[in-house]
Length: 154
Image 1 (cartoon, rainbow, N blue to C red):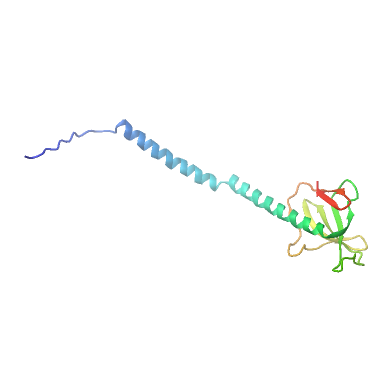
Image 2: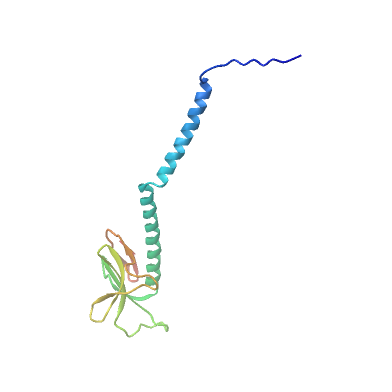
């Protein structure tokens, strides 16, 4: 016996075939839009803000460590101020005889590490291996004295 295969030559697409085609087309379009947003200007701006925020947090941690080792806080005395000056102890634990003070200064939308000489002039100076400005692009910044040896950024 011989089997006969009959083929009905049909034209067009079935409803389920059209639905399957639209489903795969939607997946491909969604993936394209997703990859477009990954490389968009908004995503890059958000990544830049996140990097800036991480840098700011790290820099504030460094500043806190510097101020922890201060023997004497000279400024601010009371209320918020845009500058903070302090003196460190020498290796023996006493206050060095130098009249120069280290400090941090908010100026021109930047945070700078400075040295204030005996004459009262401020000179920018790198903080360890970090060049000035320590942080740029700030809207405003202030230091506020909470107690005799405690400051907070305001």
